[in-house]
Image (cartoon, rainbow, N blue to C red):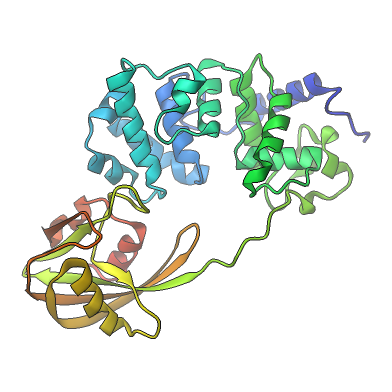
Length: 360
């Protein structure tokens, strides 16, 4: 099979890709819609999260907040609760904040103009290009992880896909390939190609609709691309968490809104110092974090959880409140909550893990 020159056969490439997409695209709840709000929500959820996990969350989210007006009117805690378990909670906080901006400053209309939409909280270059191309047929090329992988193999790019300095390289190639008459369909087709055919491992090149244009296919070097910059090993932090009982209630604390897991509720917790035992560290952390005295410390379980840049190992204890008024150092709020009502609060996945192992 002779290789075709992509720059000379761009129109053919576009037609081949779009024909394949029309016949083989997955049926997804946000496909085939023009409502910019529905497309926006889906694109936010799909950032850093696999499609299979997003589907149920998307449907529940849209059922609860069917339009930008209802999302903006909802308390942030309700939004976080519906988002609970999907991770990367800054996405939910920013989406809610942006919805409020749309209602209060933009007359309730999601903007068609790139610069205006791009300024909304949480909207980056990818989100702006994806939403505006799919919802409004604006000629912007979206570049996500799937598309970077496709471009890397099509052009045999040496630029590492995980290096910010490579952004312009991938954007330039995406801009050149974009079908400006059908930008939304083209962007979706490129994403779908990366997700289902041009996969990270074991790409199914023989059924690829555009393999005749692909540099690495013709050189049988698929496994060597995309290039990645070597990253440091992910550190692991030792932590403790405490379920503090005060009769039938337990103490929950709320994380700051602008950090990791911002706005979620959890049990008092913290990192151990070097060579500190879990039991000793638990007393120290409770005193420093919420300023109360405890007794009857009992080990419950151990939980492991991975974030993007580090892992945690958490020893979980239960204990009894003895005395002291709650004074917070770090958390922004605290509540004594009946054990039957804990599940009504938006909780981190690590907290759910130990509740599954050791129910209250």
